Image (cartoon, rainbow, N blue to C red):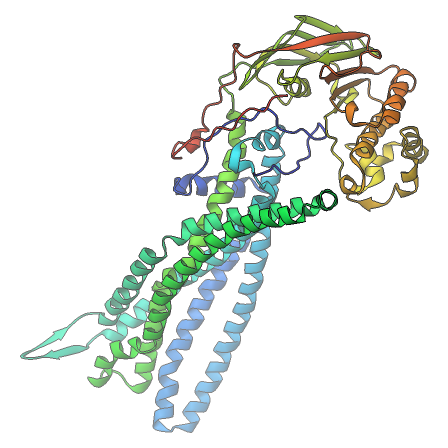
Length: 617
């Protein structure tokens, strides 16, 4: 089963309970929208100006290189003619000419390498930063995690796919530009060398203007068409390969993050079997890739071997008719090779083009899906969330829509004042997490009004805390900067929450969600609350995972250090209510209005709809 990755939000971490349904993408979807969304990312990036300058530099350098190669090809005739005549002074003179051309081309090659690599870095920077911004736009990462396959492994698409797309785009773009300029340049040369050549046929003479040009066009065009026919399956195979590589990578990360639990349960054999199944799925697509690539290699390699003799065969009529010297023959062979190499660019790069197109679809689909998260539930009514001016929290006529029904409170009008302790009880499946998300501003669909005090005075505590990697001091201060608090304050809150054994590790950098037990992580999250002292605290079932001693300490903290803090705790019927001054009840009406989410607008070409089941608590 695919699992969503972690994402940082204003709420420390929220797990999807109400799943939404969307149509999955297909690699057969339209190409133009994918290209359009990547162009939008480029156009909006801060690297746009530098990329345009780098592009102009590449055009200039590639154009100058094409000119140099024309001069190098023209050098063949006088040099080899001098060699054929055994004219040593003329040959020496031509070697000096060659040295000048070679130095000129060397400088251009170095410049092109620098421009190429720099453009790759800048393009990747622009694309990756755009994906960061789109992904971490409020609510989008949260909604994407519950949107099916497109929301699995976003790290793969942002990191590896964006890198691969940037590098392939520059390589293929520069290669296509170079092939186009060389084609335009050497077709003129080849046409001139074909002039005046006649073919002696029985009873007549035949002259074909520019016959070597037409021969090169036919030769390369036939190979390009055949390569497209044979290599077309590589596009879908590569797209599937990247998806399965990402699945295996995530499965490995998941096992690595839970090695202690696996060892305790002696589950190594089972995990090995699960990893084996993921790897088998990858191997299946890799074997298909091997077969498809092998079939394409038969064509491209065979074409390459025949190319050794083809130019001489094509130019030989002009040579035997006396229209070309030995040097002219070699010059014609060089021009023919340049023309057919430019025309066979598609043949030589079909595998890379298929790879680029598959990567473009993965990155383009991901970016489009992020943008279209804003359209989810657009037709449904929204809960109105407003900021109060009198420092009170109100819930008026609240009804929260979900795929399973409508969640309401037993009181239509609820007003909570500072320092009150309120327990909201809901049975499994009543929509407790939906209420928590609605109050946090993450779940917007429903009716009624939520009036909240200013956001800087509110903290939200999900059932599972978000523990960031880094120094423990940063974890406690999250999401604000640690320098807002004095050093002794960190020590005091750790000691108060029974975590004094961590006091000497405030500046220690670690993966704390792996080093600490679940109760310790929850105690650390409440130490964060004690450090930041919010005026309002909303908790979703987080207290129950504390040890009895830590729970007792926490209630004591609420009565003393945080006596002015209003505590709103959402939990099941098992919650103890002695601490709370008021109890409210959640109700789920499965016959009430439900959240119906239409298919994403641009996924109409998908062949089927995938519905993810609701798992309400």
